[in-house]
Image 1 (spheres, rainbow, N blue to C red):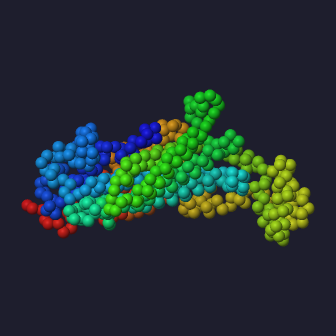
Image 2: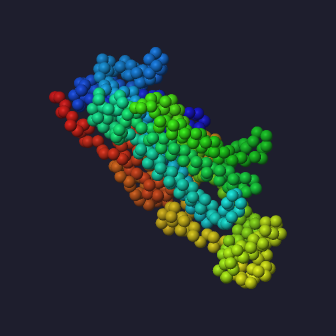
Image 3: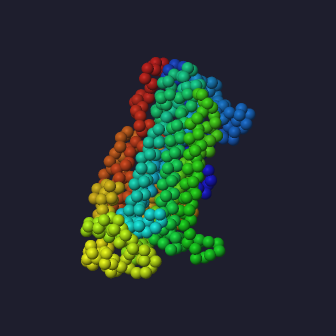
Length: 545
């Protein structure tokens, strides 16, 4: 993890202290279950919590032990025994290292997904606001990089909004798929540990039991998780490349915000380069690079090997930290993107009306010309305009072949820009839901993006929606649309239509907010059953008096 491209909310998940805390919780919850089942003394389980709950583990001491043992889990358990004392002999009963490592990794990946989902929600809010702002701002659509037909800049942003909405849905599914727990012992047969221990730990850690593990949780789950991150990264790059092209000097239809005091070049003081979108292109390449190792991790020998372990120690933190930074940077970029409607109109008119050629073609066929003849008539007038030898409409009106089918007034009517934009409302209703009038104007810039669009990693952190684990959340209260919502209720909630001041808070207006989306430290799985009110394992013997 490179600090330049990291945010503290995400890096905190992967810090050694956080990892050891999760390891302890897994071991302590397993001890609780073993005590309830009568395998270990209840007093031993209580002692584990009393002695080690809230302890700051000595990372240097664990590293010191590992240098001798050459085994990270044994090193941790040895250090934990130094803290707990003689009762530590009851820790890790019937468990294997992968029970701790795999369950911990999945807790970390689900917490990382919660932050990434919050990032996407903030990006969706910024995209929606800017799309509505430029819903009817005409610009030229390009295919193969060449002028094609008119679109609106709002449609470009609505396309991105729809793409990241799909990204959100995929990430929710990937989060659910990876949120499993395995406490099944060596080779996964539960020979030395009761399956009810796994169920208890899973519920306590906000996961669900892995239906069948060998000695490890199947890595196809992780492959899909990282593949999803790779697809999201590609969506980031697609939008970044669009903006880079639009910022070219000869186009200049949109531009990254250039702040006071910012410098574009050490040699050329006039430069205003698309450094943020170029940076996003590079970061996206890195996230995608982690997908192939994750796919290759699916293939392990027999019931397990550890060829996946070294890979995941790198790609787990690096992929999530990098994508978190990229999403937040993109959000800030979109929020402060400078748009030039006048340049868009100049570029739209640059080819002297050629963008209306298809309307002329279709009108000729409607008047009786064959498609082949109509194409020939239109193209013979279009090519001189490409060479700068006239105006398309005027050439058409002078062409006797065209005049045989269309009058001057009919030709002029074919050059109406509004004709190309007549279904923008329909598209926006499909993307954003409901009837969205083009006269709507969104509130001012949304202060939700944690990395300012003008800086290089600068800016305050983004406020976290209320379903993000509070250990990672920022100390802001949620705005009015979230008032009264309670994470952990286990159902999707259609949010009420927000007031204008907060109309673009992430996911609220789209009705995408799940009440129980992230278990975090609540240790509640959003897709599985709630813990029993007593917290006891079904079928376990009653506690001794």
